[in-house]
Structure formats: structure tokens, C-alpha cells
Image 1 (spheres, rainbow, N blue to C red):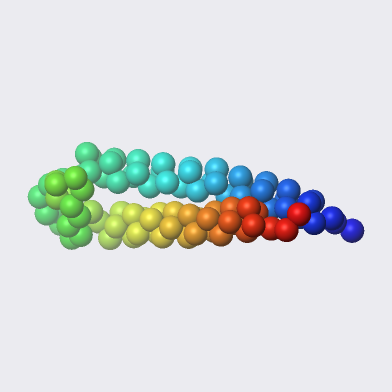
Image 2: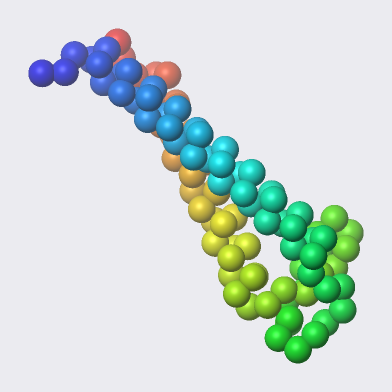
Length: 95
């Protein structure tokens, strides 16, 4: 049977793992935005219909590129929420 302190230690380890995964997702998302901002055309072309403003520069993304940006941002936000919830639960768990 697990003691309450074992459960709290498990919550802390899980929060650390989630924090590392969240940090990786955040860095990946920021990299993707900067990569698209530097490497995508600034004029609309055939197939590039999604205008996105990145640091005062408008670039045009394809449907798949735009979907990837939305998915990576969404995953990052969910991971941030999971990390915050798990960290708070670990902090306020009873000994």
C-alpha cells in the first residue's frame, strides 16, 4: 500500500516529466513560428491562402502548414494546463 508521501513523490515526478515535455513543445512551437516567418513567401501564391502575421511581417501558409501551427499551439496549451494542474496538485497534496 502506498503511503501519502509516496503519492506526493509520484505527483512531483509526473509534474517534472510534464514540465519537460511542455518545455519541448513550447520551444518547438516557437521554432516553427520563427521558421515559417523567415522561410515562407510574403506574397500570396497558388495554394498559399492563409495570411499570417509573424513579427510585423505577413507570410502566406498552405492549409497543411496552417493546420500544423494550430495543432502545435493547441497541444502546447493543453500541456501547459496539465503541467500547472499537476504541479499545483503536487504542491498542495497532503503529506
